[in-house]
Each structure stands twice: as structure tokens, then as C-alpha cells.
Image (cartoon, rainbow, N blue to C red):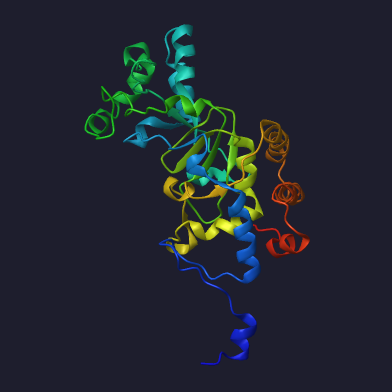
Length: 296
């Protein structure tokens, strides 16, 4: 059957050769995506780890405001206890706090009474933190019955990657319409509505994930949920092919990522896009097709 003039002029190719969700792409869009995939290595083959944030089992007890933190510190009986307690209570970010190259910290803190790491890190003993214990005892009926707990009701559940929260990392929401990523070297903890990525070329990956190229090529690689939200689980990230770079290149990206996270503006984001385009050797036409992608 002869196709209409409209279809002949505006038709696009579809790839039905795999079980992934399929998207209709124009020939130039398919060309760009093939070029990116050809030089990329799936993230599952990178030296990186992708982990979920902390599950407390009862956030009302373990995630506290700055005012409550100050109250707990004021109730410490000695300077030594106060110092220990201040180190125990860590700033925490939620999925909703994460922005493109930044975050809006809500002045929330995690009482990190972790369960330790077998053979490496001993668990927290609540007896060493009387002021924290007094706070948690107010929630005893809830924390003692929760499923997500450690060796005692005062302890958080086992977390084998506990130390990764103190490493340079990428933080991003587990579900998001905007697909924002932020580089963190300030040892923030995150709640269960975030994922963190640690390991190889973290600064470069922050720039790549925030780039227009990533959103143009891989936005549809993440399942769409209600209201245009995307599910950003590890199983979908594992398949994303990304060009690997040298330590020197990662250091160069660290400089521009630090700069844009200090003060964000569109011109800086576009300059980082250009660096990514240069890495992938995109033509002027390909760059024009991609443009500047900022999901509103």
C-alpha cells in the first residue's frame, strides 16, 4: 500500500528488536543515539556502586529537625558525650531536596545509630549516648515493633555500604520528573527516596547525567509513572552506555561541577553541555538537534 505524502516526509524508524520499551525516533535522533551507544560502556560494567538511601523503619524518631538536634546536644551531660553525639547525628537529604547541580537542604538530621559492618565497624551502643536514648525512648512503642531495625530497637537495620555515604558521591531521587543529579563530598546521608553512586569518575558522571545529551538520549530509558515521573532504579541505570574517561578528564569536570554547584546558571550548564558534546565528537547539526534540555 502506498504511504501518504505526510508519512513519507515525516516517517520515523522504530526498533522492535529488543524487549525494552520502544520509542519512535527520527533518523537523525537514531543516528545520535547510535553514536552515543557505540562508544559507551554499560554502567553495570563500570567500577561504580549504586545504592539506596537509609531506611529507618520509623522516620519520626530517627530523622529530626535542627531544633531537636540542638535540644539533644544541650541534654548531653559531658563535653565528651556532646562531641560523640554531634558526630552521630548526620545531615540528611531527601529525594525532593535534590536539584540539578544542587540541593535545598531542609535542615533535617539522621540519628545514625547504625548496626555496624561485620568485621569492620562495630555497631552503635546506645548506652554511650544517653541524650539520644532519652529521645528515642519517647518512641519506644513504635521503634521496638518496627521490622526495619538492627540488633536492638535503637539501631538502624544492617547497611553493608554504610561507609559509602562518607565518600564523594552522586545523589539523585528514586522517582523524578526532572532527572536532577548532584555531586556530594560533604558526607550527607540520604533517605530511602534517593540513590547514591560512588566509585569511578563521579564528577564526570554528575556532568553527564545532568547534560542535555543524557536527557535527549536516555530520558525514555526510565519507565514513566503517573504525572510524568520517571523511575530511576538501578536496574535501568545499569543498561545506560557511557563513554569512560581518564582521571585527568574527570578532574577537569570536577572543576566545572564545583563551579556550577557553587552558583548555578543556564550559561554554565550549557558550557558543560558543550564539553560533553566535544567528548562525543558531535557535529554542529547534532548539537542543534539536541539543544538545551531542561525538563520543566
